Length: 123
Image (cartoon, rainbow, N blue to C red; front, side):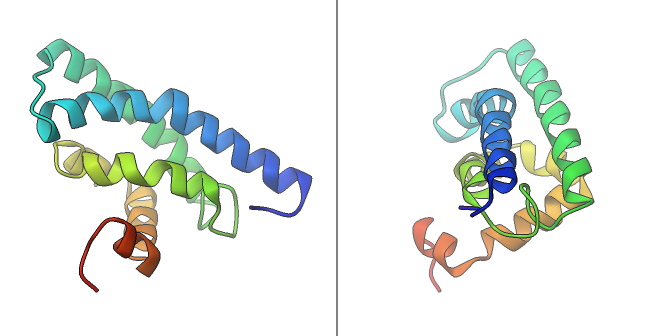
């Protein structure tokens, strides 16, 4: 949690982007591929476009800073992690690969020992 007001505001902004612009689209792929709850192809196509928009915004930020809200790992990064983790078992993995800064961020945050433990991966 950032200690300064500007840092907290940036963190809150990114949490809002996750909640409104990333997770709803990622969940369509998670429903379809992880939970085997079939989604219409038009729904998946629209969700893919929505993720492209979210990843484009993330890419621009992560080209400037190592984490979404700046130089430090914050709750903003954590909020994206479960949805991206699940979505990586779907075509979202190839879609995310088109965004080099988002991919580098994902590799960095998903390798954190605390995330590995949380995700139930062996150390």
